Image (cartoon, rainbow, N blue to C red; front, side, top):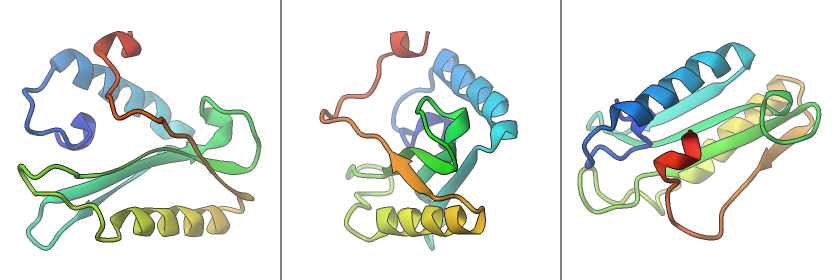
Length: 124
C-alpha cells in the first residue's frame, strides 16, 4: 500500500519496486526498524517516517537512531499538500523521545540537495 509506495499513490504500482521495499522491510524489521505514519481525521495517510539503530543502517556510529526517511505529502493531488502543518516536527519529536526511552545518545539524519526520486536502478 501507501507505506511501500512512499506516499505516491497517484502512480501505478510497480510490483518490482514494491517487492524490493517489502523484502527490505521484512529483512530490516528484526534489526530494530521502526516506522510511523500520520493518519489525519479523514483516515488519510499524510506522512511517514522510518528509522533504526545506527548499527543496522548504512551509517557508522554507535548508540544512535538513524532516520532513513521522513516524508510528508507535498502535492495538491490526493490528500493535498500537508507540509507546513507541523507533521515533520512531530515525527522528529517522536523519534527523539524514542531515542531517549531506548537509551540512545541521539539521532542522525541524512539528506539530499536535489528533489529527484531514485530510479529503479538504484534499488538493483
